Amino acid sequence: MGDLAPTHDNNETHKISAVIFDLDGTLLNTEQVTKGVLKEYLGIYGKVPDKEKEIKRLGMTQKQSVSAIIKDYDLPLSPHQYIQDILPFYQGKWQLAKALPGANRLMAHLHKQGIPIALASNSLRKNIDGKLAYHEGWKERFAVILGSDQVRAGKPEPDIFLEAASRMNVHPADCLVIEDSVVGVKAGKAAGMKVVAVPSVQTEIDQYSIADSVLHSILELQPELWGLPPFGDCIDNVLPVEPVFFKGFYSNGRLREFTDDILADLPDQVFGIYVGWAKIESNEFLKIVVSVGWENDSCSSNRNIQTFIPDGNNEDLHDCEMELVLVGHIRGSYSMKTTNFLDILDEDKSIASAAFCHPEFSLDTCKSVFPQE
Image 1: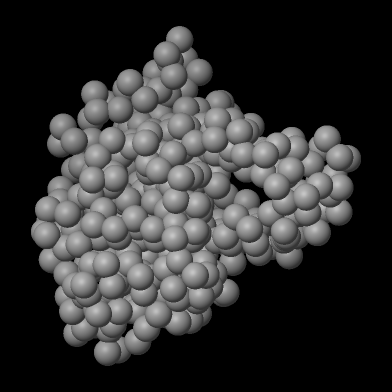
Image 2 (image 1 turned 135 degrees about the horizontal axis):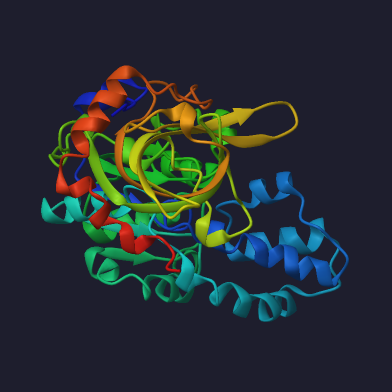
C-alpha cells in the first residue's frame, strides 16, 4: 500500500496522544448522498448549483453555509425559512450515509489501543447525533463529541479543536486532526495541532498545502509515523476493506462509472489499486483488479478506472455493463500529485492472485452486496 509521510520532518518523531476527527466527508459520505438535495431545492426557484461555490462551502458552519447559499443564489428567504424548508430533506438522506474507506478501521484500532478520540464538526450537535444514530457503536467510541453550536466560533477558528483537547485533558500539540475540508485544516493548524488532510474533493488538493500530511484516503494513514501503534491487519500485502459497490460500463480494459445512482457512486476517497469481484450481464462473477484514479483536464474531472481480469483473456471480454464490489486494497500512490490513473503493475497482479486464495477476499464475503435479482 502506498503511504505518504508527514511533510514536516519533525512530525515523524512526535508522539500523538489523541486523535480528533471531522464527521461529514471525513468519516461519513454525507455530502455525497445529500448532493442532490440542494439541486432539487434550487430548482423550485429556477436556479442551478454552481460547482465552484459549493466546493467553497465545504466545512462551513450551518449559519455560514445558509447565508452563503441565500446570497449566492439570490433566494427570497430568511435563513430561518431556508433551514425550515430544506433540513427535512437532508435528514431523510442521513440514513443512506456510509463510512468512508478506512474510517471504521482507524477508529476501531485507536479505540482498541486506548487512544482517546474526539469528534469535532461544524454541524450543529443535534444534527451530529442524528447522523451517528445510524451507525451502531460510533457514539460510544468518542471521548468527546462537539458541534459548532457548543463553542464560541466554528471552524476555521480553532475553538472547537481546543475545546475537544481540553475535555480530553490532552495538550493541543499532542493532538492529531483528520479533516477533509480546507476550513477544517485551517482550524486544526490554528489550534497548534498536527493535521492530516484527506480531501473530499480530490481535484482541489493544491488547496491543502498547510496540512502536515495530505492523503487520498484514510486507508493510506500510517499511525506509526505519528507515534501511534501500527496496524497489523494486512493479509499477503492486501488490506481487507469494507465492501465498496459501484456500477459502470466496461470497454477495452477501462470502466466508465455510472453516476445516476447515489448509492452506487464511488466516494472521492476511493483511490488506488484494489481487488474485488465483478458481475457481468450474463450473471457470471469474475475476479477483478481495479485501478481507481482521476482524469483531469481544463474543463472537468472524471474518474479514470482501469481493470484487469486475472482469470482468462481480457481481450475476450467485450463491451458490457458491470457491477463491482471492491474487497481489498493493494496500494495507493506514492505522491499526492498522482491523481491520474495508476497503472496495474505485474506485481499488483501477482499480489491480487495470491489474495484471492484467502477467504477474506472470496466471493462469499461480498456476494450479498450485489443487488438481488
